[in-house]
Length: 166
Image (cartoon, rainbow, N blue to C red; front, side, top):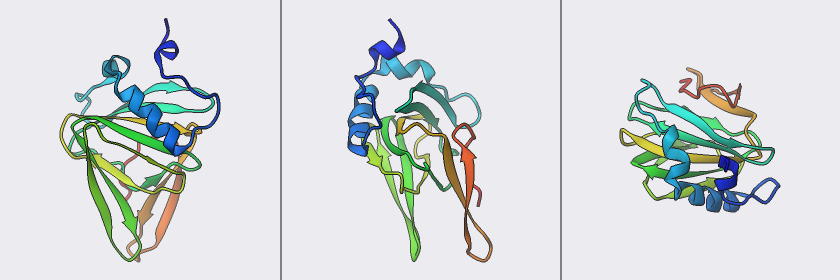
């Protein structure tokens, strides 16, 4: 039996944010699928690809308090995140004020569309989250803000390490 045989059934097409949320919830409930990929001893945020096909891309992310993705989007992909251990923080930008930040604890799941810009960080050392994207990630955008307040988007590959640019 292969990993594909043990994953929840996929519809064979791009998934909606609601479908991604349900699917990643199912994967999160199966620690036998993702626990072998968990590591917190790398000195930086550790991430490992769990699965990828033409319709979905699934990652295991391991977080410590010092980990921060910086502001980014997922280009044309919708996504869903299930926190399986500890907690992560998610911030969304606001043009006329401070970002809105929330802490998402173990057992919580959220989804978003391709227009979503956010910044994620570890809220507790040793946290783990499962991320699914559909269509699969190829490009992402990272954002920086110049000293004059100009917002700039920088295109990056899905394989590049996300980090703060500001």
